[in-house]
Image (spheres, one colour):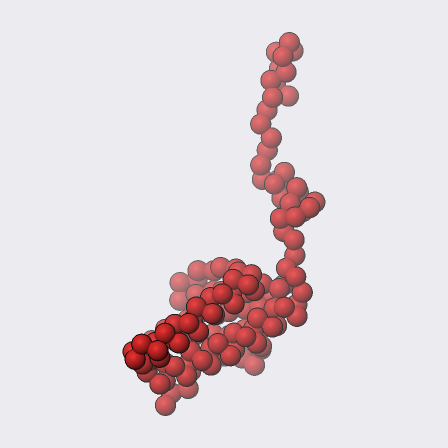
Length: 133
C-alpha cells in the first residue's frame, strides 16, 4: 500500500495534498492566521480564512461519508489518504488559530491608506471660479 504524500517537511504549518496522480500538487500553509493554498503545478494562489478552510474540509469529510453510505466504496488507499489529509488539515487549522487573528488589511486607517493610494478622488468643478479642484 503506497504512503500518501501529505507533508514534505516536519513543519506543522505546511501540508501537501492533490489528486492521486500528483499527490503533492496543492500546498496548504498556515500563516498570519490564514490558510494560503498554492497549486505547485500551475502557480495559482489563494488565501482563505480558517472558517472557509474548515468548511472545505467538512465537504471532503461529507464526500467520504456519502461514498461509504451509498455503497460506492472509495478505494481503501484513497480513503486512508483522504482521512490522513483531514487529520493534517485539523492540525493546520489549529496552527493558524494559534497564530492569532489575521491583520486587518481592510479595516480602519490601513484601509483608508490603501484606497487613497489606489483610488484618486474625482475632480470637482468649482462653480463661479471656472476651475477644477
